[in-house]
Picture 1 (cartoon, rainbow, N blue to C red):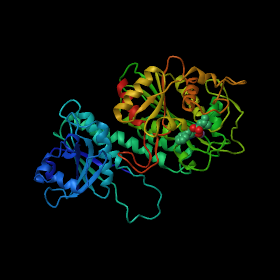
Picture 2: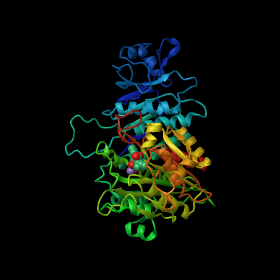
Picture 3: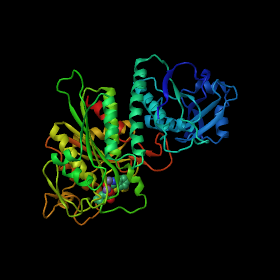
Picture 4: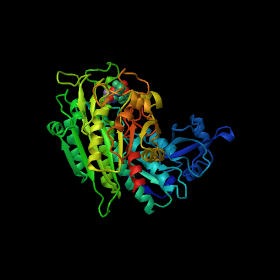
Length: 511
Ligand code: BES
Ligand code: ZN
Ligand code: MN
């Protein structure tokens, strides 16, 4: 699905002839929760002759974050409809935190499905924070309006089409910095939407060979160098982890590498993005329970994020060399599937004793990480829906973060900036001790299949495949990669695109 056209306007919002206009609404806790129109809505409030907030209050508005209240304007301003989005308590500075605006804008634009043209008159500070706040507004608008096209055979009579044109009110529509934010937001949102599409596709439509084809086609179109290893090449190349996990499916595994090389930069920093691409995780021979298994179509969210982030990198052209590695396999039980008890040889030569075929992610990732290190890199940033333990420990919005100190700090800071929080987790010595194998170099999980420190085992295992001197981060997105509930803020049902914006921010921070 194509995304809405985005433009900047600096005409008076009250005069804009659009189908609907979005304004912000605060509550003032020091004033009994009285409503306050957010900055940007001044001329609209004036047109209502002092009755804007009382009318919105009458309609039930409270200014709570994410709340959406619609008001017909009956000729007071040019647009026939106002959508007031709650932005929470009156901010101490000139604009609310970017993430509040990102969420509020997302909710507003989604609520406006059915309106063709929508203008946003939201608070922008007039200091050096302005580009960051504008970025949040633009991203929220483009991401909140995402809708997966789906597979319905008949057009739905009740379906309201997503907003097709967005005008964003700024003080000066010709301002270079503001225009650069529009260009960037279009690239970033296209990337996140692509990742969401891949995650939302049903697992019969997206299996390793077709996923690889889709990524290759998109990568080539974006001007990236592309390499694909098929099953025979993976076997011949010694990728024992990807081969073991993928061999149980008739749709055989793939490793896709996408490469971006910056022009005119001598000796650039090198970053490898690595993603888990299990197109469906049944658990394999250690099969999962039936309930909720369908959501394991999202077990390729890490690879989707890496592939889509590479498309954005190709367009944003940072001064950093970036490669993406997507380890794709379908984890199936069958006569050719790998088994508990197997010993496999990974790409870096280490032998692993398998205890549970459902801990498959670390096997495909171990190979991909080792390959990235062999190619030569300064950083490995890896994303995976790796453990249920991440969801138990940190929930659906905060990713688990493990790795080397410098990379953890890089990813944590980047995630904070973009509204994709990730929380550092330890990699204790005793967890590694619990993974000693009698017959191999390491066991895949704790040998008593003890779930204690379950998320940590994943990170500890992956550390075995990182070459010395490489800064690395493992981002466990089991929760944040997929939004199971109803849409909220700029998150729509299904794939989220996390941690694409973190990766792009981290790359910017390294450049
Ligand atoms: N893909 C799952 C992890 C997962 C669970 C992602 C829930 C998203 C939501 C992963 O492959 C898995 O099955 N992990 C096992 C590991 C265990 C066998 C050591 C788990 O979490 O139970
Ligand atoms: Zn999995
Ligand atoms: Mn699994």
